[in-house]
Amino acid sequence: MTHEQTNRRAWDDLATGKSQFARAATDRECENPLLTLDTRGWLPGSVEGLDVLCLASGGGWQAILYACAGARVTVVDISPEMLQLDRREAERRNLALRVVEASMSDLSMLDSDSFDIVHQPVSTCYIPKLAPVFAEVARVLRTDGLYISQHKQPTSLQIVERDGRDRYVIGVPYYHADPLPPVTDRSYREPGATEYLHRWEDIVGGLCRSGFVIEDLVEPRRGVPTAKPGDYRHRGMYVAPYLRLKARRIAEQPTLDDRSPIWTPPST
Image (cartoon, rainbow, N blue to C red; front, side, top):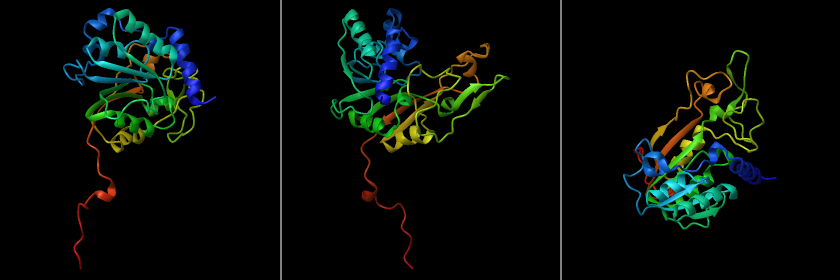
């Protein structure tokens, strides 16, 4: 079974099992959708009439909120059950929504330069290579388009267990390239899913090499000082589980052969 098939089944199970990751937007959240989506002010003041791609984002939350805010929304996800939640919520709220079942690394069904915003929650950990995803996002975004994405921190994915003194043990090498092995501590791992570790150079460097300028980077806090050992919020006090990035699609850069040298040594 391929990693895509495994992860499709895992997320179908999460959707039908009413996981916290398959929670639809509430009426209260839909009253002020942009504030719900964006507590840091990364989004423009209005998305009315903008084209938004919610990437690997099925589940009835992000796409519904953007649609409530007046955007023209396309949601892409590999899980048909997660997308069914978007269809259900869109019908219930009388919202227009384009729903596409596809992998995040192949958006060939979408036109180039067709979106103003791409918003992607934690999902890149489910694919072995980031470069195809970033290349596709760069292709479908218009120049100056906004790419908001969240990823699992590499160190968090290296943790394998909590020892007898409640310390978190790193047991996966930083340069591990294969699917992550089963671990005892699964605080930030989804059941049944195949996951991959992506290093900082893959995430941050990969975005820059794909034609993006990073405008902000934050580490959403999931730790709670009073949480007991064994709780995911306890682990979150020691290792930040996520990073969130705001990136901007810049104009296509010239190839190396097209660039003039910055400095030419004097002839002797």
